[in-house]
Amino acid sequence: MWVFGNGESRKHIDLDRLKGYKIGCNAIMRDHEVDYLVCVDRRMVNEAIKDNINETTLVYTRKDWYGDYRHLKNVREVPDIPYESVIRADEPFQWGSGPYAVLLAAKLSKERSVSLVGFDLYSDNKLVNNLYKDTQGYDEASKSAVDPRYWIHQIGKVFEHFSKVNFTVYRPLNWETPKAWIKSNVEVDKISNIYYNT
Image 1 (cartoon, rainbow, N blue to C red):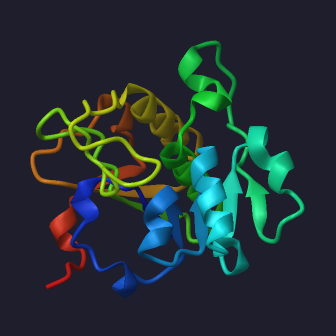
Image 2 (image 1 turned 60 degrees about the vertical axis):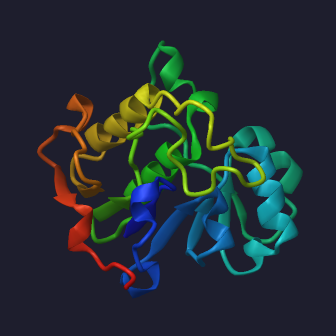
Image 3 (image 1 turned 90 degrees about the vertical axis):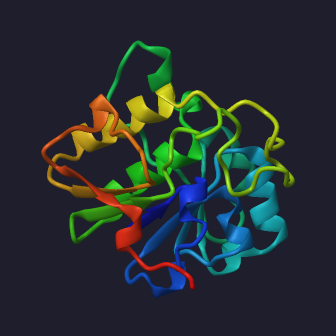
C-alpha cells in the first residue's frame, strides 16, 4: 500500500506505475486518482465533494466535519488514534491529513507493508515545501515552512503502535531520519529507487 504526502520530493514520481492501493492527501486529487483520499482540512473536503471525487474514491475526513458529509456517497471518518496521551500533539484535532493517511494505511494494509512517498517533513530553503503551494487552500511559496514536530511525533506513534506492519519511507536527498522514526519495522530508502517520470 502506498501513502502519498505532498512534499516536493514526489514531483517526478510516476504514481500510475506504482502497483497497489494508494492513499493520498488533500490536493493530490487535482492530479491523480487514488483509492483513498484523506482531507481533514474543511476546504479540501469541500473541494473533493464539489469535484465529485467521492463518486469513485473513499474520502476520509475528521469527526468534527463528518456530520456535514455523512449523507454523501463514500465519505468516511478518519480512524481513531490508537493510543491516549495528555500532550497537545496527540489531540485528534492536531493531527493533519498526512499522519491520518499513514494511520489509515496501517489499518487497511492486508500485506502488512506500507510505503511512504512525499513525506519530506523539512524544507531545503526554510520556505513552504508543498507541491500545491500558491494554489487555493495552500500557503504562498514565500511563507515559512511548517514546523514538522507534530507530524514526526504522530507518524512515529503510528509506526510504534503498528509494529507488525513494515513501513518503507522513501526519502529525498540529504534527508535525516527523525529519531522517533528509527524503529525495527521502519526502513528508509532513496526516493530515486522508485519510478520517475522522464
